[in-house]
Image (cartoon, rainbow, N blue to C red; front, side, top):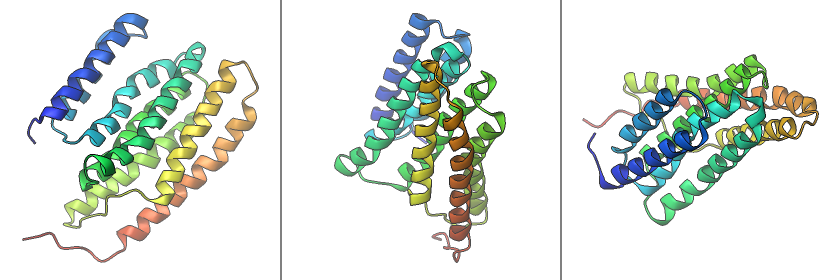
Length: 227
């Protein structure tokens, strides 16, 4: 993988914003946070396309999401981070169609950054005592298992279809909405038990639906690799 101009410029901009956020808000231990921003920027410097760089914003936002999730008093800020992440998820596909071109790389990158971001949110909330730990692990598995299965298919010389699916999009949207709702209810000192109960039902169901779809895709005849 080689450096490209868009990746370097966007990566540097994200890194500067991240370092400024750490210096201005003192969200926690600075070294791990700065190291995370540097690592994501380094990876992003090799990824072409404006739309892919917009998607990578969610990987950068995983750091503030985790930091805010650990502190119940900052759940309002976490809700703002979730809203920004949701906005990038809405516009990256539009940007790809308008300025770039939808690609296999973009199709594979999107669920990876979704998993990184939402996994950080869920784990932070669970460790902060706001969210059930078992449900946080379901969310992590929701994104980790498809990635593992995809790598396994590639190792068997099969080319999995990397694109958005209805089940995946619905699952991700509901996770963002439900977690955001829990954060806002807690932030305003309102009873969030009904929202949590809804999340405990909806998130596992949509996760299973995503896994079923993945299983159907995996059963399709193998597509031989060129050459």
